[in-house]
Image (cartoon, rainbow, N blue to C red; front, side, top):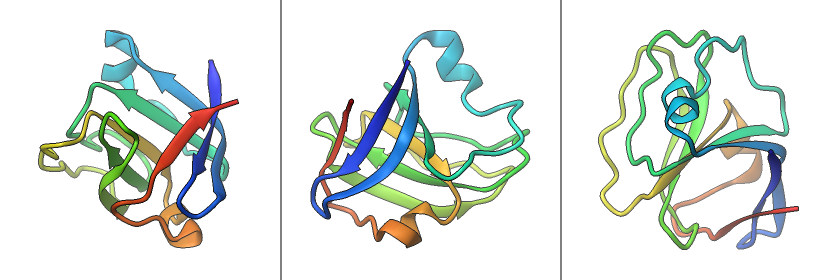
Amino acid sequence: MTQRLVNRSKNSTLATRMAIASGLFARLKGLLGKSGLAQGEALWIDRCNSIHTCFMRFPIDVVFVDDRMMVRKIHRNLPPWRLTWPVLKASSVIEMPAGTLQTHLIEVGDELHVGD
């Protein structure tokens, strides 16, 4: 199932094709095995407040959000073989192509929305 990701605070579309990883296997797999993310793609990992990029082949932009989809922490251009510290108030994470945060000027405190 794919959804659209919008930054309500800045009235901009961040992703037109966002996959949702909510099951255990999908959350564990994440982006492993992929060769990259195209512009407009994203992965939303539910019930997650820390990630790793071990075994990945490309850098990603990462947005941690709380239950209200408020941005709590961002990581720009996170390279392979890195870990993030847990983000205490985050309930999920959205992974996007590197450069998305710069292009769309996403900031801590922005309100995101997932929908059709």
